[in-house]
Amino acid sequence: MDSGLYAAYTALLSRTQALDTAANNLANVGTGGFRAEKGLFRGVLVDNLGGLEGDSQVGSSVNDFGVLGGNALDFSQGQMTETGNSLDLGLQGDGFFALQTSRGVLYTRDGSFSRSATGVLQDAEGEPVNDPLGQPIQIPTGTVAVSPNGTVSVTTPEGNTIVGQIGIFTFSDKKILKAEGTNRLKAPSGVVPIAGTATIRQGAVEGSNQNAIQGSMQLVMLQRQTEMMQRALGVFYTEFDKAAAEELGKV
Image (cartoon, rainbow, N blue to C red; front, side, top):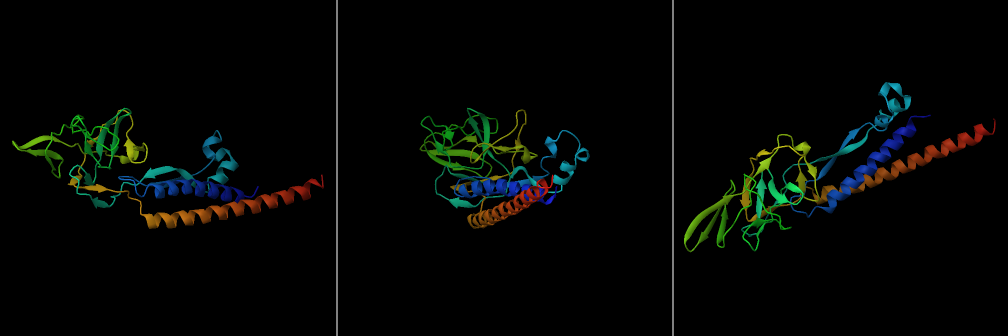
């Protein structure tokens, strides 16, 4: 069988997967702290053939062509937007905020925070923001100031008081992090984070690191490539049907 069929098939599969990823990236252009995903390529089918690549002509043929083997998060910096809100915090550099959730500790770059009714610093979904020791941060009523290293102080009529520090965490290998929703990340069980080097910018939030114009162009390109591969497969199937009809008639 002509290996061109496998080339068309794997190309269509990879373009379809990449199309889904590009569409998700573009849909989250306006999501604070969103990390875009990029495709990783590998061989297809050979893993499911039950043996070494050299044991199968099909595996060898197919592995000459690449398909998406998954997605990798892009951890590049997103654009900062000034808000003027003293509890909006943007991260500049390597690091994440830690949130204490019902699903365990999750990490995010979205610093759209607020003060809960009980005085706890929380995210937009009401999840507490952790300090460096994994504890929630209590913020009394008053004027809040957050330094670049995360130190939180509150000015009241009685004076200025340091009330805590916002934890900034990172990982030596960020590839272990998996997306949990639109702008949260989860580390594997047992993996301990290290101190991040990012600085905090008070009164600003970091947006998505997906560029809307580039994302739109990529989506259009992938749509066209997908259509081309669909047509290519159609040609192969037509040729195979024709060959089968001609040869079977001779049997």
